[in-house]
Image 1 (cartoon, rainbow, N blue to C red):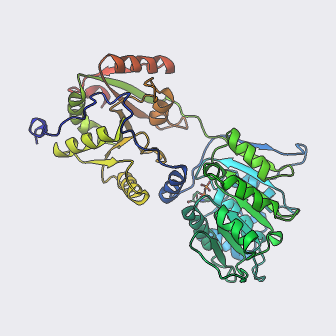
Image 2 (cartoon, rainbow, N blue to C red; image 1 turned 30 degrees about the horizontal axis):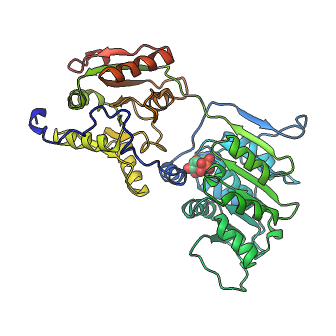
Image 3 (tube, protein in one colour; image 1 turned 90 degrees about the vertical axis):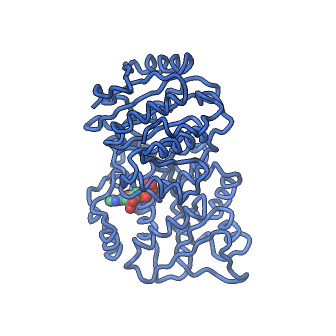
Length: 450
Ligand code: ADP
């Protein structure tokens, strides 16, 4: 199909797409981003970053284990771990688990990026401490949303597969219990509001009998109005010797303040910093275009090259992305469109198709792409260069789109489209900022990068 035969879709009114905020994707919420990551994740994220540990007595030895056997776990629990395919502890588990399982129990604040094994660590702690022969709640786990609570419950059920007497209760909206009843399940997982009502208003269980209290996804938690207060009120009802744990993917000032309020008594603090992204091993190019139609033609011309591996094409607005995807498809190319107006399940399905190679080219906006891990992407095309809400070049987003962590092996290509004075200046600004050349490329002649 010749590209000239398909130019009947009108270009979006704003031709460059830069600087106009009108139809910018609505930001995906923190809760949705978190659940999307969980749905998509299939394996442990490993990192070369160093672990940092802060504790009250820095002279006391800190144990670290290289195997699950070294932890003296209950037999059925160890079996559960092996059934899940866990052969050895992850980096954060190596250091966290000996402290988490020690006696007397110690409180902990742990931060590491999503996918590094936090959930498995605290689920293992709850299951190690629970006495399944006693039929009342002994572990309490707070999650920001219904969906996240259910996810934690699934992990718990899997790990406790061989603990036949163990049962879980979900304290989430819509899950009703008759007044005057008592909960017999040993582990309760739920959201702060419902849990607070169950414990304090209806007294369905006794907070003072809780041995392990976990607050997961603290950073997502505090983004919701009321969750901090509710969590603190629940925490205040716990007994002095309850073990209190908090987990978070990020650790900025707000999270630190909340963490320190909700986990008192000198907790051990463990942080696994995110590896920094860098532009090492990334070859950067730009293609000069006249306008948005011209950019589309350029993308069409380089389709053959960029679809050898997998590529993501970033547009500034949802409208541009939809327009471009439609034109590309009409032009006979196979592309996926990841757009901000989709439900979580639809997003996950599109990302999975892309991961499986059903489409080699994924057109998206910045916002829609949040939560996707782009390790398999070899080419990133900035159909529109990233700009901040006030129209300035956005170097951080640029790095985030095309940068990689880990210095070895992974190389990539970035291709930036410029049209007009403003975008050319933005490109120069980015080039200067990172101190790395961005080379001109001819869209008709891609030999240079092949
Ligand atoms: P986080 O809570 O930090 O997001 P998870 O505990 O959910 O991380 O773990 C991320 C993924 O890695 C999950 O798919 C989980 O099943 C897996 N996983 C966790 N710990 C291990 C381990 N020790 N060995 C192998 N896989 C693991």
